[in-house]
Length: 60
Image 1 (tube, rainbow, N blue to C red):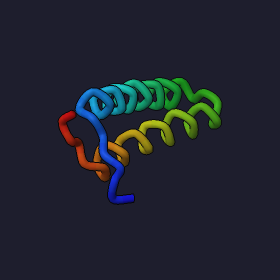
Image 2: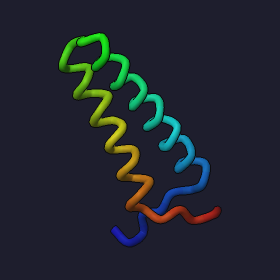
Image 3: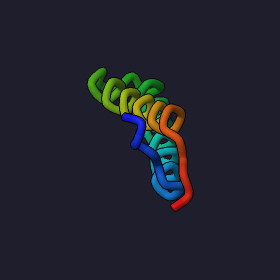
Image 4: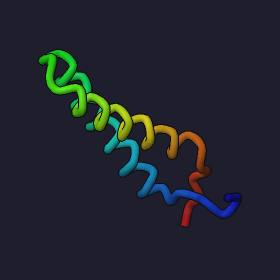
């Protein structure tokens, strides 16, 4: 997948989404909420951060 790149706008959206999902993860964890919400928000945050970290950001 050498042709996969992120635009700066998409990278920013993914980073903000990761921050929001991480905040949701922490809130559910503190309130001892349902485990499935922990998994969903944690995996979403991890996936977004991995995408931003591993794919190059190329200006359009």
